[in-house]
Image (cartoon, rainbow, N blue to C red; front, side, top):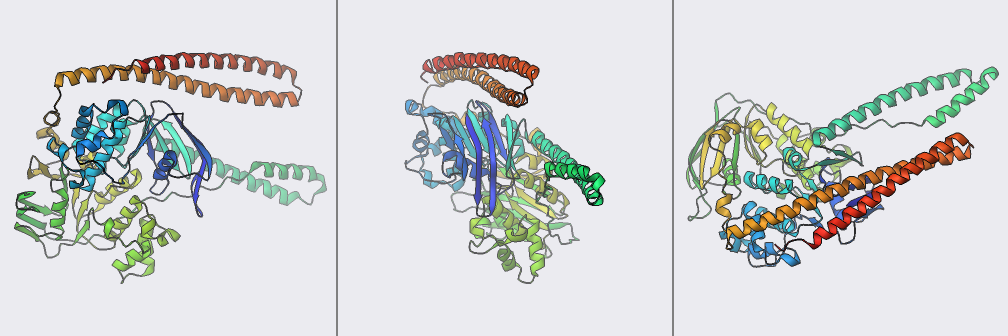
Length: 601
């Protein structure tokens, strides 16, 4: 169980977290949401101890372990399998099959188990880090954008894995469907405060919207009442006959307090700068062939016409050539064979995986935009900054201090500055928050030109695609139809059986897994009961505090009858609380006994 008590954190004049408190109870799987730059990753760093709060406490039980998926890559072993096994617990070092199973689920083939981690791309290296964290089975698992470098099959495997996760989990992800499918609770960092609800993001955002609507209605009523009171005071201030009434109203006004007007939270609201295009086809791809080496051809004999209004989604496993295809269409690479023929009036806007790396760290956001379009006025540049949620002084932040999501917004802003009728987007939602992903879909719906997008978000695929370019089983082909059509007619080949080949007997592993599953089932049931009782104890303790406060007030005013009633209530509450603690002790003893009898797997 994790407790965060009255934590605050500021960077200079910017307050990120303002006196936040919440608890992660046993077995809770929590989705953490909030705008880019609101402090989600910072909160993870506070929990792991990488950062210290300005005030407040973060309380972890003794011997409570925290596993954190970091983007920092550092490997010490000579093979992928040996590196992954570093994540195994001390008493499970011989359970190599567990590492093989998780690596397979994350998209590594059996041949790749014995390659050096340094031979792989950054995306696969992050997957290896993820495998190590999952194998460690910490009490609290912290995952920051774990799907950014995963393909669709790996995301589906990770979803199933996390749905069975028996310990605590906190996850940051821009993929709303992925988050909602695995979490039990949702926590938002909103207006520097914390809001926690049981349920998914939809329930959370609805509750926040409702509470803010009620707040604003109450604020307006109080404002009107305050104005009426002030009018009365000013009108009769000089009247001796109404002096006592005036003083009474003045005191009431002082007690009333002032509710601050809620500042609008900035949305990523933008429109791509489109140019008209009269012809039908923006680009023709004819018998395209490409490979980085003669031995390995990524794309062979691909042909497709890209028309205005097309929404073409490029899908497939990582490392098969999806990003390479977009670089070819953007003229960053030359085909080995075949032809890419854009229309003379085709104007491409390209968002690639390397766009963020091409930003100039020493420049401000405003300067980065102005460097691209020196012909534009400062006012127009600032409008683009505002559209990307960098209004006012935020436009003067240097690129070097921006978060990953903020840098993605800068790269998108650079596309807005240039007129286009064909968008090439390579994983544009990586590092964006949930709300910004919604804004992205809305902007793409309004764009009148063609869109070719690489994405692993099945929400995007279902919403956008009217045509697919599919990389599957070492071939690439065009599928005419929606993503649902593709799933119904072809679907993804589940190659988990192929990847499941390991050296130990399958039957033995299945037995071991069955024993482990039974243990985990009992373990989780006890954890759930403990969490329920702990919650009940927390509620009873708060109730007793409330009764004691009322007792103190009644005693101060010598209200005898009220004191007797409150003492009876306090006694009953204390009895309930004592019973709760006894039940908790029994369950903890059962859990300890179960842990001691844990099978050696």
